[in-house]
Structures are given as C-alpha cells and as structure tokens.
Image (spheres, rainbow, N blue to C red):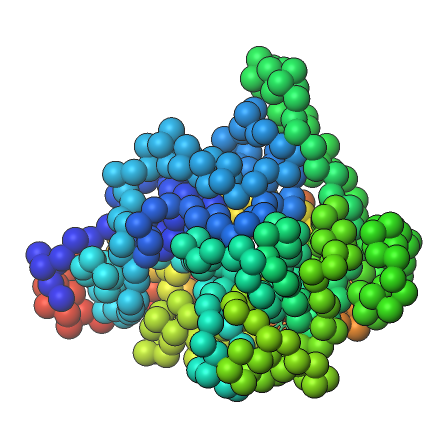
Length: 512
Ligand code: NAP
C-alpha cells in the first residue's frame, strides 16, 4: 500500500463507547485533530447502546459513572437507566464536536502492523486506512457469549441474548426461561416477571444481592448542581472516596466482607419466606468474589407464584423442553441468555496482527497481559483502553478509563518528543514485570480466594481482568509513560527505501 492509495491518520480509535469517546475528547484536548473513531454499529454508545433489555440500568451511581470532564447536573436518579446513559454519551459526542471524527458502520475486520512503514493497516467495513497509533476501546463487555447447549437447534421458540434484546418479540403471557443470574439477569427478571405467563430461572450459581439505594434526584438537588457546579464534583468525590476505602477489604482482607454477607442475607430474607427457596438462593462463596449485585426487586420477583428457580445450569434442550444439569425440566416458549460476554477471549484480539505476524489472541493464548493495562509486547503503538487487569469490583470504570487516557496522552507526547516516524513497543520484560506484580497482589484478593468461579478468571483460572488496588494507585501508575519500559523503533521515513517499502527499521536503545 503506497502513501497515495489510502487515507492516513495519526490515531485510529476503535469503538465509541465510554472508552472510545473519552479517547476522542482527550485527543482533541491534546491538540490532535487527525484521528478517526471506528464504530461497527450505526450509533455511538457501546455497551449502553447494545444493552437495551428491560430494567437495564447502571449499578454504579451516575455522578461517578460519568466523565469528570463532562459532569451532568441533570442525572434524574442516583442510579440512572440505560436510556439516560446512552443520551449522555450522545451528548458528549455532540458537545465535544466528535461527530466529524466518527465513522459509523465501520467494523474493523483486520489490523496489521507494517514493520517497515511503522503504521497500522486497518481494514474496515467501510474501507481501508492506516494509522500511526491505534487505540482499541472495544471494551470487554461488547461481544455476547451464549453457551453451546446441546439440542439448541431443536428449540422451536424465540432465543436471544440479554445484550441483543428483541423488542419486537412480545413476552406477554409467554413461558420464558432466563439463563443466568449475573448483573444483567437480575435486572431483567423483575422487569419482565409481571408480564410473562411463567418465568423459569436457570441458576447455576446464586449471586450475592445487596439493596440498591436508588432514588430520584430531586429538582432542588439538580438546581443546586446546575447553579453550583462544584457541588456535582463534591458529590462525585464523596462517592469515589467511599469506594476507595472499600478496596482494602476486597484486596487484602476478604474476611472482613463477612459482615456484608449478613446484610445481603437480610435483603434476601425480607422478600423470601420459603426456607427451600432461601436455601437455593444462598451463595456458598465469599461475597465480592463475583460482582456484588444491587437490587431491591430481584428477590421479591423470585417469590412470585409465576416464577420457578431451577438451582442448576441449563445443560440440554429437547424441542420446547429445557433440561437442567440436575435433570429438572421446563417447557418454555422463549429463552433469554443472560450468560455474559467474551471477556478473556475478546474477538477483536483475533483481528489484530502484530509485528511478528502473530495475532493478539495468539499472543495472549497463555493469558492476557499488558503493560499498565494498556500495551502488549509485539504490538507497537497499539493501546487497549480497559485492557488486562483494569476492571473494578466496586467502583466506576470511568475512573480507570480516564487514567488510561492520561497514559495515552503522555504516550503521544513521547512519540512527538522522539520525532519522525517512530514507534514504541513495550519490552517483554516490562510487560512480564508489571504482570508479575499484579498477579502477586492478586493472590490475597477476594476474587482469587473467595471460592467462586467468575468471568474475572480466564480458562486457566488466572485473574487477568481485575485491578487489585485502588483507582488512585492505578492513576499514579498511568500518569506518565516510562520510556525505559519501551523499545523505540525508527524507520528512515523520508528515505526512498521507506517509500518503496524497502526501508529498514532501526531499534534504538531507549532512555532507560
Ligand atoms: P455474567 O456476570 O457473566 O453472568 C453470566 C451468568 O450466566 C452467570 O450467572 C453464569 O453462571 C450464567 N450461566 C452461564 N452458562 C449457564 C448455563 N448453562 N446455565 C445457567 N446459567 C449459566 O454476565 P452479565 O450478567 O451479562 O454481566 C456481565 C458484566 O456486565 C457484569 O459483571 C457487570 O460488570 C456488567 N454489567 C453491569 C451492569 C451494571 O449495572 N453496571 C448491568 C449488567 C451487566 P455462573 O455464575 O455459574 O458462571
């Protein structure tokens, strides 16, 4: 591919959810205007566009689950619903004038690193371009996972995933199976219970469910937030501080969480009076090991006469009959899979081909690992927003995204300082060192010691998803790029050899 045949940009961002839009705002603030945001769908919003299931809301308070640089004094509830969050993201795209940069219907099909020209070749559904730097902000919760259930082809009814809700299908009066008891399912169950004829919940593992302190934010509060913007920031600060203080219990002293289990049990006992149902719904692992779920309506819905809880996973389907692992059978008209996402096996990783011709998925076969949650060995000038070990169990992912955007901004500054056609590629030793420190801290955490299986762990049982510290620690760790952790790769960009594709790259000893 020659320079004239294609469009070239400084930065290509993949995805237009919180991570992608946040990256776009940050790029503009850093004075970078030569960038595109590649979005596979026909609208922005990421997971908050795709998840439109009944009851969908965020279980992190809205004043914390929003950008620090785009406070929203208008949040209607302490925990806002999907529609309002999606509107917020559309609003961010407008007020920060991101639209001209956004390419909708442009799913990335393949990304290849060109080791001679030091750029990424990007094939998308709407054409090919090249970029010096790629920011992958596809998010870990973007590709729905549906288990391979034997006999699913024999099911004559309706089947869909929670993240791909079919709003044309009328659930009223139907016999519906809900598969799974994660954060999505526990919002769906109370939202559809009243309208369906019969709801059968296939529960492989009972979740811990705490009350949700949700309420409308009064007009007076919103007026104060509008007139006195510092009050929005103060509210955010308070929400953040409380969560920051909780981290120690998750990461160092999981036994302290026993007290919280008592509160969760009380939440269940208030709604569930039947001892047999209580027994089915009582978890046998430490609270926090899986995400702690928040709901005031889940248990009351389960106590209704049109709901059956099958305390066993779905293992087979025979026509209309769903069969659980314990042999329990249920006849249904529709199946809703609330079975989560491809998190540790993100499909985008198969499409990213690095410096050695190896895909990111191949390189992460033994487990995902990235320096400071962002850059992977063998993938120059490629950064993941919400990369390995950046997830949180108890606070807002927006905090982690913003920390990573600081890293991105400094990364671009470093490239500018180095000058010319140049790339940074993390040293394998730096990635391994970072990962070893993360995994060492992980050993004591509730996610590793709590006695559960969760999507935080990969197929080898390694926790490659959660950050084992405070958001403050992560922010500090990502404030600046330590160029010593990188190899600097240069190409004689202006030489005739480079333009004809014969130029040879030079690896420099970095500032280390
Ligand atoms: P999830 O947490 O991965 O839950 C998947 C559920 O499916 C689990 O309960 C799992 O059981 C179950 N499952 C899988 N195969 C099954 C089978 N054959 N039979 C019965 N059950 C089966 O997925 P999710 O609920 O979509 O949530 C994913 C993440 O999205 C959350 O953890 C959270 O980070 C995010 N989320 C956030 C919000 C929010 O309010 N902010 C809302 C929704 C989602 P096991 O537990 O036994 O594995």
